[in-house]
Length: 249
Length: 194
View 1 (cartoon, rainbow over the protein chains, first blue to last red):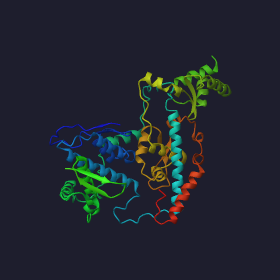
View 2: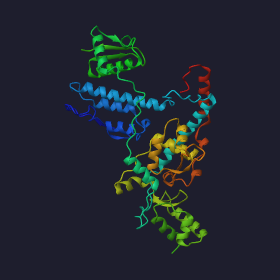
View 3: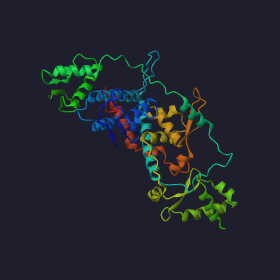
View 4: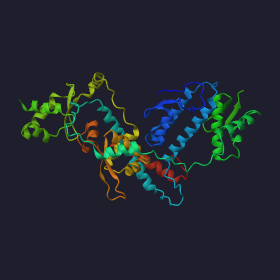
């Protein structure tokens, strides 16, 4: 597992995350390429360990003196939260976006139980399969496939059609109906936090008092960005406990 | 030339498993004699004493390198072993193996998540294939099934070579799941069923 963010002064035309690359079990290459593959459904979001991506980014993050740090962090937080949202939406039961269809009846307790038990069996079968495939992974057949005889070369039609469809079709536009207009940015909240901190430490709860969920989330991202820059120290005595922002400069 | 030598030559020249019927047809041997000779080859190519093993996979016989020699063979061929499958891929294969043939929707329903991308990857690796259509469902979606390559990779002759699904899960584990669910039902908002 490795990654890299080149610490160079960014030219105006460059994208902030264009130098960030990741190496994961399911993908190796530029981070932006991974995002594109996920949007085109060519890499399954469940296969992408988001925690590892965040760790890779944090490890490879350039020093705070880099003039583009805030912009790069903002872009990363933006894309990472989109990935969290995508993963969350994929894990959650299907939503009725149009609101004009009656949602399926919820599962009865017996059906839920049956489904969980069946899934448990599939999980155990998958583990057994993993062991079996690994045990036989190093067995190579005795002969390489001979080249096809003249006139006998055959390509399966369905595979040819599939390949052509994938090669010539445009990638489907990602679903955006769930996205609302941008009403708040990380920069707005950074400014707000900085002005609040001028009077001393402030609790996160007080900071987001009266804010809606979107603003609270962006405020959290802004606090993380400021902490990453070294402008703020975050104190939290226990998981899910009260969070306090302390100015460090 | 003795029967075992003839069979051995045909198997060595074939990259795919060869059924007994094809071996009989290729060598002209009587079936009984061919079967007996295959037993002789099985002893000769025992995994305990030979770098070559005789496998009974995908409904046929195949000569292959002994997995214990894998590292040496890979170094010699200068090629890396394909990347191992992900957890999701193993789950999809398990669904199709034990519950299949299945449509993509049925695989996703069994796992509780959309599995189309994983299925696509497994088809590209020739471990799954579309083998028919579910004519009873709207749109007659394709049915997925395991392939000869899958059986070869799992060193199995057929579906029956895998342990029964119920035997893979401890009854106690299932009871614990049921118990947790019933507790969550009793305690409104109980979250210990996760």
